[in-house]
Figure: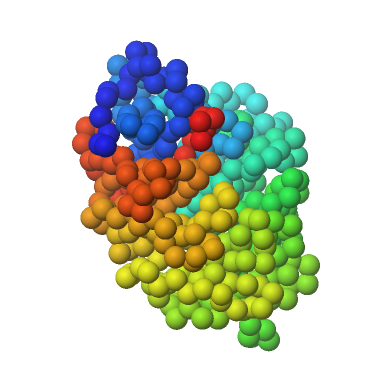
Length: 427
């Protein structure tokens, strides 16, 4: 099914009141826009445009460059977070398409009144808090309250790690440290992730400078670095693309341009190396139900499953014909999903370790794929300016899909990322 392109108007469309009561997906693009779509088994509808533009009732400011990440607030599905190459992150209201806050540095004082989409920092004296000055590579929400409130962390090519208040949009601090052992990154920061245990006061960041670091976002202090060191040849020798905590926060997993995956003991700093990939490893993650299992993907055209107890690959998945850009476990990790520059995605059954769904049809390389809550749908994002929502409930190997096409309400450039939101009672 093709997206109908029904025009959205905040004052008149039924979607304004119903977006959050049904499943939806948010797509984001190199064209600087994000769009909200509602869908079911039969159809998909355009619902809201988070972009620089004007409709019959509202005007708002959007991004001026490509969007690098999009996510739905874990505590409120009506709030959407985007980050961009324009050096800003924004929080949007999915119901009416308005921008709630633009996350940027500010000079603030008690007498200064911020714009509706501009944050301020409370305090008795005016002072400057610098925001990002270059591409923001990623933005992430805390899943739980941190020091009494929810936090957002952004990281960028400017080497900065910024912590924001998710309610007010205020910049709470820049995690840059001081001195040679500060943990300050000396290269672009690839990503950040909050720790997994309920008290989410720590984050891990990773960088092109071949290091990853742990920070305390309450005290705004550096905790520990896992870095290149000539006395420790086991450390990474290339840019680190991803870093994740294990479910008990005792381990950190990193994937690197040096073709290796490493597992770090947070307490001791010791690491073990998973060798086997023959080109850059783009992403690696723990099985959310079993931290002894790891899934990785690489520019060597393969994905691999690893057993940390044996420190070896249990499966080499060679079904793609080009770089495997992403690999993620389902919410029920009996399945996992890969997407590739060969324009396809595969859904794997863990028991068989073979693709049970082949998701083909895109005419451009894929930039990502993810499962919905309940794992009954998959969204894929492509250079061909479209996203596709795949229905896995039919049991068919070639799953049917909705195509979110280029057109009056489609994207005009590559779709770089997507996130599911809305209500999933039926799923």
